[in-house]
Length: 182
Image: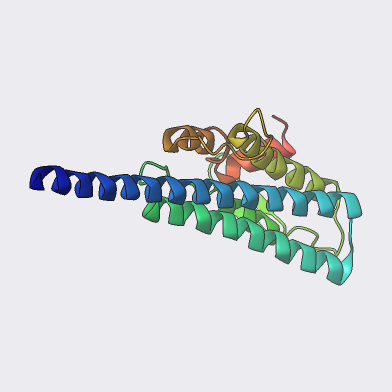
């Protein structure tokens, strides 16, 4: 009888641990999915509304914040939810494009800060569209076919594949996709 009670207690605690891990994973997927969604919406707003001056500067800052939030979510997910998630610097690179950067390697050159003349030009829009496409593809692959929202059953391995497929680009690749065509 003691063995049955002890076994029942251990089974119950194991079940609680498994449930807690599943809930943590689902919460992580939800937060990451909606961080992608918010970044996409910020980019859409910039392209559609085409703000200028101080408003544009503010909107770029808000986009930067969203990209860095997504980066933080994925980094924290690796440490606290699943070590099987691969690292990605995509969000940091996308953020760097907003502020300008120098490219090295085969694609040498300098990319000026987004809207350095207080308005979005054609090159700025191309860059924003390219970044949005990466984010949208990742978000789409994370979506459930039934609900159109994040797939709560997505596994760490599947999410890792999505990251590798869409969010593992170096600045030179982003630049080439944006300015030299895909």
